[in-house]
Image 1: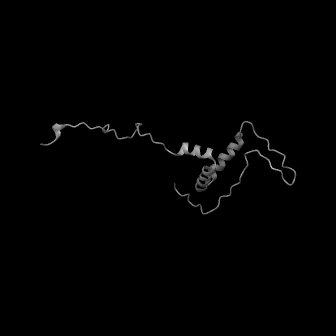
Image 2: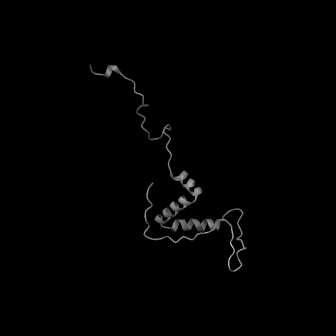
Image 3: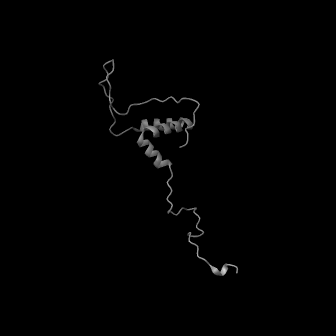
Length: 113
């Protein structure tokens, strides 16, 4: 497995709890729960996330992806499906050598005596 390159800086990450679980706090606000959007994220939040992804440095983005893949199985499987190339030995590829099928027939007339 390839080593993760050092970034030279520690990325500032904010951890957001998406589980919806609440904990009691000292202020008594622990029983309040954030309302969930039933349809998932709205277009405004999706646009904001896309803009943030485009702005983040590539090294930081790679570091975050490796961290997410190491800790979240769903992220690991999604990244493996998208990034890891599987190769089927029996599949014909566009630029594959098609000189012969792999079984050569002996032509004795071409051999010098």
